[in-house]
Image (cartoon, rainbow, N blue to C red; front, side, top):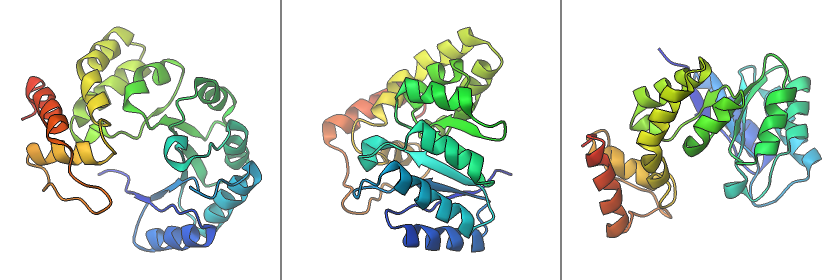
Length: 223
């Protein structure tokens, strides 16, 4: 059995609270709550947003910081403040690719708080700095390889981690050749796991990008 985490984020705090409560009622064991997007809160606004979400439920909260999609960065200081002040804010999915911020989070986090990357392509350096793991896109395609890479890095077997990273590095990149999750859904459809169905405004990839991804899947003997 695995931990069931539910995405329950919104750029309206009231809506994010409602989604979090609904997720808890539905049986979610943890919530992944994305930083508010578009309205670009201040750091105090981010803090109050996540604190209200955390206080609305009893299950763990994972803060999701992804500036490339939200247009705003939740600073390391704000995340650490939440970790200290909210008993159920237990982790961050840190996808800023800002290594100064990542190192601050890792070095200054409370003992109960986990720092995970959201970038498959940065797993190796992230783990080498002392990160705790990854919330991965590629794990939908190659879960055993992602698990092996993380475990190798955690146990100090960096040669094995580097070998795995090099083997799958192109796949990690191609998974973002167009807007996520379109490429990974296309790949999973080729692997017989799901149907290739998207909801607007997401649309199928271009033929050229489909070909590039399919060739890499064939090279890795995944299709």
